[in-house]
Amino acid sequence: MYFLSELICKRLLIFLFSSLIFSMTAHAVGFREISTEGVSLSAWYPSETPPVNQRLGPFDVEIAKDAPILTGKHEIVLFSHGYNGFYRNHYLTIQALVNAGYVVVAPQHEADYLLGGSDTAAALNYRYFELSKALNAVIKSSEFSNYVNANKVHGLGYSLGSVSIMLASGATFSSQRYKDYCDQNQSLDPSFCEDPGWIYRLIQSFRHDVVLTPISDSFKEQSLISGKVIGSATFSRD
Image 1 (cartoon, one colour):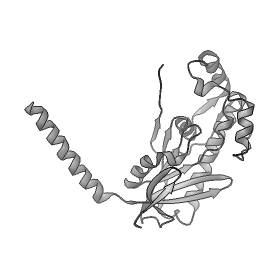
Image 2 (cartoon, helix red, strand yellow; image 1 turned 135 degrees about the horizontal axis):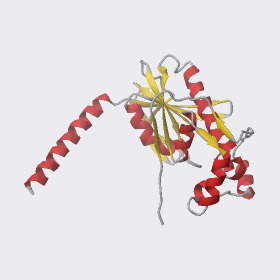
Image 3 (cartoon, rainbow, N blue to C red; image 1 turned 90 degrees about the horizontal axis):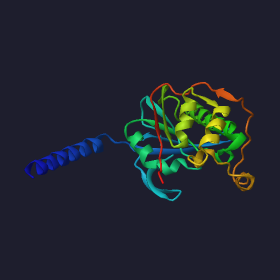
Image 4 (cartoon, rainbow, N blue to C red; image 1 turned 90 degrees about the vertical axis):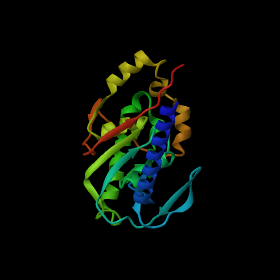
């Protein structure tokens, strides 16, 4: 019992000390929305401007909107959200990365409703296209170009975003292998294999302005990632 109490006290002290250090080194979170070549994205970055509580979708977040970036050369994290998701859903993860000194580039993926069946490869390639355009927009912008380290780009993806980040790291996608996998695992992996159908796609097409580029059976794009790659996924078991 004494050992347990002592252990708890030690962990509490470590937690409090870590929190103190973290609060001393944490930055305000700058936030900027950018639109480029049909791609909508957000840039999150360290700033000295005091943040203000603002509404971002359904969330109340502490951000310094359109504030100047903190002086320095910040490494970049290219972030990709999950299937039919929103980058804003991951604001806590992104804020933690900014507090660590990174600039986070997060596009809003618009072609997810076209995933499934014969359009899957082209829709995934569109995700790569959005990541590429978002990264270039931040690197070349007058607000960020002098304050980011374009030679150090990391990748972080959640769920389907993990696949996107793998593609952005130089991985290859094969339509034939995708078809073979889903022929054998349709019932085991419906979220990846099911075709949502033309009615769903028609409805979604009024909300998204997406034109897919035909893609070969097996495609591989130029790598955008020069640093570390982390992917996160959720699993369910009936």
